[in-house]
Image (tube, rainbow, N blue to C red; front, side):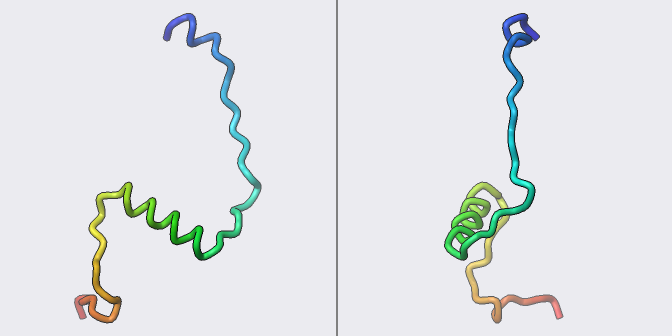
Length: 54
């Protein structure tokens, strides 16, 4: 670690005590972001057509 870095002030993050309530629109937007940043394939079929292995 360089001397310049050791003099940087610490970063303080303040988090809420509880989870905020999400509207359906915000929840859909966050889910879309999560899908975009993951490499998990997303099925593009209605839930009724998904074979659950039974």
